[in-house]
Image 1 (spheres, rainbow, N blue to C red):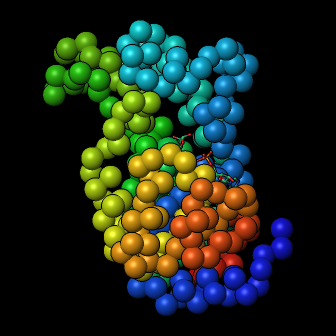
Image 2 (tube, helix red, strand yellow; image 1 turned 60 degrees about the vertical axis):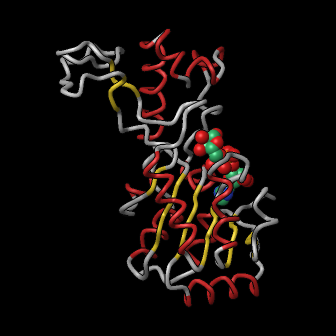
Image 3 (cartoon, rainbow, N blue to C red; image 1 turned 180 degrees about the vertical axis):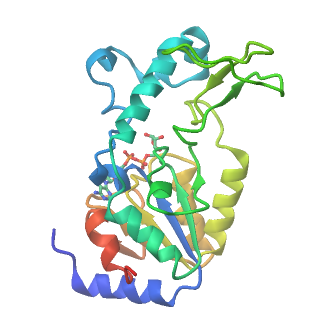
Length: 245
Ligand code: APR
């Protein structure tokens, strides 16, 4: 893909002059790592299921072992991937200036690339938590294929991701909004801009005076909000936007 040199230069200058950069990433930044989306992972044994069978609290309460195995499957798929140059470029940027990195991804690839303090709006595949725990929960050694249980109250662990119908984690949402309101450049990478409330953050940033840059090889719903659109895959584009120390 050939990037427009003038647009690239303009984006570089904006980023170089920024004091605080708010970055919002979505599934597209992990595409070049080969991380399958929820739907892409519905292959083989899983192809007969709908997201509602596997990614709601009601489904988990009905069929905990099934849903747990689905998340084990997804964790294994993600563990077989690696961060790509876009993830590494963002980690390098944070060594140069203040970056507030907000992601909709649950794959942990930003952290594996070295980014710290990542604000995860949709949770993380590898961060389980208790469902209806007693507050003193302690795990018994888990039976393979079954969710771990609390030895004291019998509560189950659940995947620490945001399921359909659930609110975003409050602290992450608050921090993401604060990031959107304080960045002077807003860099939006690899998101369709269709899933709210995350999709509202670039508009919020713009209202607070940020210069909005979108990086996406396809047209996205956030192009209308952008001051500048870089039509390119993230792994090719991001390393060109600032020095990769
Ligand atoms: N580089 C940058 N962007 C890319 C690349 C790439 N190499 N490949 C694809 N994209 C773009 C697509 O063009 C699309 O606009 O990434 C975007 C991915 O869109 P979605 O799949 O809708 O992902 P996202 O915006 O993160 O969706 C938000 O929806 O599926 C739920 O919870 C899930 O967090 C996810 C949320």
